[in-house]
Structure formats: structure tokens, C-alpha cells
Amino acid sequence: MTSEVQAPTHDRTGVPPHSPARVAAAITALALGGFVIGTTEFVTMGLLPDIATGVGATIPEAGHVITAYAAGVVVGAPLIVSLGARLPRRGLALGLVLALAFGNVLTALAPSYGSLIAARFVAGLPHGAYFGVASLIATSLVTRDKRGRAVSSVMLGLAVAQVAGVPASTWLGQTLGWRSAYWAVVALAVVTAVGLATVVPASGRDRTASVRRELGALRRPQVWLTVGIGTVGFGGMFAVYSYVAPTITEVTGLGRGAIPWILFTFGLGSIVGTTLGGRLGDRWLFGSLVGAMVTIGGFLALFVGAAHHPVSAVVVLFLISVNASVLAVLLQLRLMLVAGDAEMLGAALNHSALNIANGLGAWLGGLVIAAGLGYTAPAGVGVVLAAAGLLVLVVSATLERRDHLRVSLSH
Image (cartoon, rainbow, N blue to C red; front, side, top):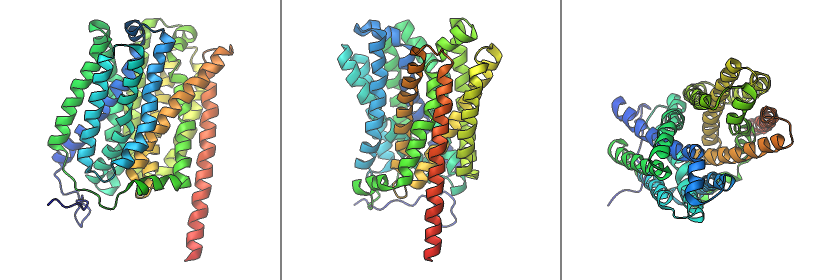
């Protein structure tokens, strides 16, 4: 009979029991899952006109397809992680990738606008939960001083998707029809599932896990504060990114042909920032989080003026992307820390927060543009959101310091 006790991931020396090559292969397979998720999440934006035509909807109506996916992420992350807490981690990750494939099959086969909305909601459900369990698997394979780099390596798949997966699948969808892009995602998900089953070490069940324990993390004020930092503070980046195309053409004065290169540059910044975020998290998590929040606010403020000149616009957008990606990794590590025994839920909640930030930033950015303030106004909104995120971070630090002082005095 198989034991239900969590299999040990480190020996007494703290060194992972697997070879460096096995660890690298396992983390690569986990990152490939992130690549698949990033591709299916963002390719919809590139194919929006094709999708609208294909299902007989207007482009604004087709935009709700993106919202449906984000809603799936927000709902699925805490729900799936809590219900699957006692499952073997590799098995849970494998099941989530197959669920992602299923959601994309439904997307590719959707005969109408309504069924497409439902299909994208289903496709979004595994998103946050996958990053939760994948982050936990990755950190279990390395020593404690490399946990940040392990998490950032998994999240690197999202960044690489923006540079390679999204452009390639967008081209495929434009050439062979928008449904072909989602069939490509299905194929990639199947390859990922094979990789997970082959190279990720098996783990036992955590007998102590339960829905109550996982959701118990939601009683921790620091969890909610960190979610708030991500929801508000990260919204500034999305306020700018959501309207980057019209900003580049209407304000910077570049042609439509420059937009793919701008997005490519933004993706490169995401790769740099994701890699850097893991290293900063290993060295000084909270201080780096403060620094990232301050600098992203500063670069968003710079973009108001920089957007009027091609070179400065590209440079500042790159730096915004770097800082936003650093922030995403640091928030994930912070949530895993403050969630206590519910690390997997903490990691998953980060993606719920970022998807809410996506909607918040795009909505607020749209409001200021509609008010006639121009396409640089969303950057101003971003500065305000970054400042609000920093304020929540200060509250978090104050409460944490008070709690530490109380504990020390009680001893």
C-alpha cells in the first residue's frame, strides 16, 4: 500500500537528493507548462479581430473572451489548490496541464460566442493552481538559498511565451485560422504532460493537508495585504500595457509595423526581470519588494514624457517590463512565505491578484482616455496605483514589525 506521508525532498544536509541534471530537467518541464499558459493567455489579444469575425461578435464583445479567462484564473486558483491539497504534487500538476489542454480543445471547437466565453473560463481555471503547485515542486528540488531562483525559473515560461509563443501562435492563427492557435496550445500541453510525467520526481501525499488548512491562510492579514499589493500596485503596468499599441502610433508617432517589435522588447524585459527577481528574492525579499514598487512607479512617471520620443519610449517600456516582472516574482515568494503551511495556495493567489490587476489597470486606463486626457494618462494612473501599492506595503511592514515585537516581548 502506498504511503500517504509526504516524501522527503531533502536529505539531512539540506542537499536535494536528485542530480543537478534531473533538477534542471524537472524545472524546465515545469517552466514549459508556464510557457503553454502564457501562450494561451496572451494569444487571444493578438487574434481578437479574427476571433470576433469567426464567432460573429464585435471586437468589444470579443474582448470579454479575455475577461472570461481572467475570471477563470481568479476562481480556479484558490478553489483547485484547496481541493487538491492532499494529492501528490506531480499528479496535480499533470492533471492541471491536461485540464488546460481540455479548455483549449473546447476553445478551438467553440461554435458560438457564448460557448467560446465558457470555454475560455474553463481554460483559465488551471492557470493559478498550476503555478502554485509548480512553484512548490520547484522549491522542493533545491536548497533553501535557491528557492527564489527556482520559482523565477518556473515563471520564466510566461516571459518566454511573450517573446516566442505568442508571436508564433498569432502568426499561425492569422495564417490557418484563429482556431489553429489553440490547437497548437493543446499540442504543447500534451508535450508538457509527457515531460512532467517523465522527468519530475514523484512525491507522496501530504497527509496533514486539508481544505481547511489551505483556506486557513485566508485568515492571515499578511496574505490579504500581499494580495492587495499585487492587485493595486501591479495594476499600473497593465494600465500602460493595455494601451501600448495606440500610444505608440498616436503619441510616439511610429507606424503599426513597430508594434510587434515594441511587444517583443517588452517580452525581453519580462525575461530579464523574471530572472533578476528570483535572485533578489533569495538575497533580500522584502527590501527588494519595496525597491521594485518604488522604481516601477518612477518609470511609469517617466513614461508620460518619454512616450513622445521613439528611443526613450522603447527604453522606458523595457524598464517598466523589467520592474513589473521582478515585482511579480517577489510577490509570489512573499505570498508563499506569509501563507505559512499553505504555500501552494499563496503561490496560486498571486496569479489571481495579477489577473485582477490586469482588469483594474485596463479599466482605469480606459476611463482616463475616454475622459479626453490622452494616451499617456494611463501611465499617470499607473503612478497612483504604484503609490497605493507602496502604501499597502508600508502597512504590511508595520503590522509585521508589531507582531515580531509582540512575540519577542512575550518571551
